[in-house]
Image 1 (cartoon, rainbow, N blue to C red):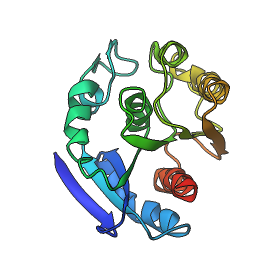
Image 2 (image 1 turned 90 degrees about the horizontal axis):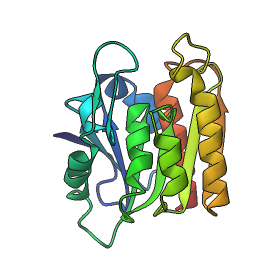
Image 3 (image 1 turned 30 degrees about the vertical axis):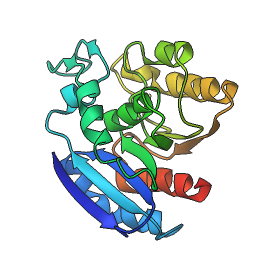
Image 4 (image 1 turned 180 degrees about the horizontal axis):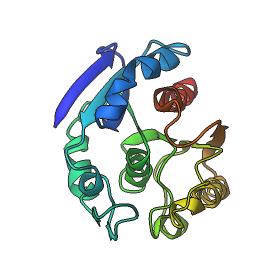
Length: 207
């Protein structure tokens, strides 16, 4: 894992984010958005080696291209938990796209995270909404967002994303989770740094 630290390393508010090169290209706008709310945080970014393996909770056929999802999220989470050993600190996890799905899945596995910041998460992932319905979440703060044009795609699975994220939000509300679903303008690739920054900012305001 390639790990980078941003913000105040001495903060007790630890934000953990799985990233790829595109996320790192947008990191300045993400940080500026977070710091419009608070500078009391330490953001730890963890570079993902194999996106479709490291972040997928279980195996699933490819949705675009030929790269199947091979279900390596459990191993990834074990590595992430090693960053969360200081019990005096507050840990939050977040991410964009499939990293957002990973973050949301992670809070069903462990109670170490006090909140999740899932920006444009890939909740179209086969079986994930059903998993949310059938499994107890272990944190009580969840931020969700989606672009208002993200479902306008020819891909039949990804076209369900607006309905799926609405269903996810309703499941969380019914579970008594403090949650918000924010709709952003544009498609999946518009302003990712600002979107994940807003997600973490919301979490910090709740901290």
